[in-house]
Each structure stands twice: as C-alpha cells, then as structure tokens.
Image 1 (tube, rainbow, N blue to C red):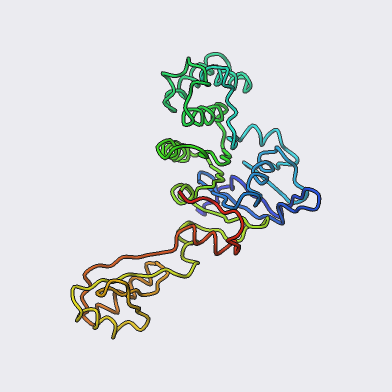
Image 2 (tube, rainbow, N blue to C red):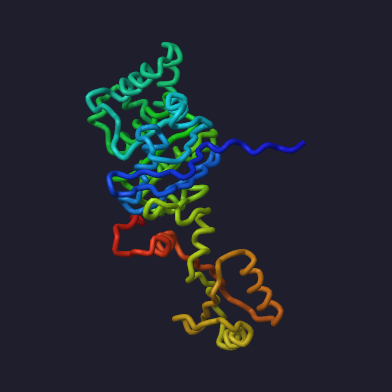
Length: 319
C-alpha cells in the first residue's frame, strides 16, 4: 500500500505585501510540515512579523496563495482562526486579572462548557507550572511567568498550529530554556510551531527546518546543519602526538594547513559524514595515527551574514 504524504500545516506561494512603495514580502514561498518546528530568521524589518500576521489572518496579502491547517487564509479566515494560536512579541496577558482569570477569559471566548473549561484551565496551570500563582494578579508575575501564561492562553483553544513571534525576547537564559522545553513538548504532542526569533541559538536548538528571509524573499532553507554546510570555512582539526605524525599527515593530505598549535593541522571540510569518512580513510590507508580529531563548522551567525550579504544592516542576535 502506498502511503499518502501528510498535508502541510502551512503552505504559501507567491506571497506579496507592500506598504506604499515599500515592498515587505516579494514572492515568499513557504512549506511547513505538520508536527514540526519551522523557524523564520531575518533582520528587523525583513518581513517576519508581516509574514506571521498574514498567515494568522491579521493582515491581508496583496497577492499569493496561503493555506494554514488546510484552509485558505483569504477565503476561510474563520476556519484558520479556529485552528491556530498566536503568541506575539508583546504579551496579551491582562495584568489586572489573575493568571486563572486570564485563562478563564480565553476559555469563555472559545465557548467552552463549564466542566471542560475547569479541566482545561487546571491542566494548563499545572503544565506551565503556574498553579501556585494562579490566584495572584498577573502584574506580580516575572517575565518568564508572563510568557508562560501567554502561551498557556494560546493553548486554551487546542490549536493545531501555533505562531510564536519572538516568544523569548527579554527573558533570562533560564526562562528561555524553560520555554524551549515547553515548545518541544508541544511538538511531541503533534502541534506545529511557526517560530520567528532574534536568537540564532534558539533556532539552532528548536527548529526542524530554518528559512532565512532577506528583502522579502527566502534566500535559503534547510536544517541548521544543512545551512551551515553551505558556508565556506568548515574544517577538521587534527592533532598529533608528535612531529613525525604531523609530517606524515602533511604528505598524505594535500589541502592540510598548519594550525596555531605546532602539532595540529586544519583540513577543509563541509562537516558531512561522507567527507569525514574519506579523510579518515586517507589517513588509515597510510597508517597515520591521529591523537585528536574535531569537526568545526560555521555557526548560524556565519550563515546569516553570508546569506543576507550585508553586515551593515541590523542583524539577528546570537546569545
């Protein structure tokens, strides 16, 4: 029996948006598989938030076809809204209400019956470690607690697709990692996450696929490792026990270059398993003993700068 590929959670083709003479999105193409984390990277002003607003029905596109959770965004906006959740850059929490009251408000907006409302609120408070603070005004919450409550409010409607627009901006490292664990748990449960972020480490940690947005177009897409391999500068560092071993390796490896360490060499490599196996095979065939071996690939900082091609503009942040 031939299996049918699952329907993508998000599909956008030829997406265009301009504000006056300023073109923000210029033929954007995106496909996001269900049950994955898809991260959109770009400098401020690259069009990330505009993309999220169009995909979540908050803004209309000038041209293009967009489907989210199988529904046409332009023709079936209500069906799309019923299937998604959105957590924006700025918290939607009402700080005059308690955490529980904020969740109850969202449950009422989703027309949940009393018993289902009570059960879902209790589950979300426990899931996001907010049970003890449930009766306290949200104004007393820390930044990390507010972001967790904001995301919990998004989940009241049990969305299939969640748009997270820079969800950890301003959080301390501990709170950010707590959010990462929550996101991983959501995806493990089958939810699709569309993530925009200023933190390259965040995309590297979470995303199954990453797209780099520049001047309204996707200039590259792939896994983090695939994107890193596209950028020159990767190498394998070999360290030897003595000068004889190093000299033997130099005779075998044409592209080897001296390292700062007098007993180490650098060999250009894209970091792939194939190239690493070939290198090890060359050394093994000549019985060259290597004391230490390490693979060094460009990071997402290098990827971003190389693909956007303009280091003078505002860049995403690596922390």
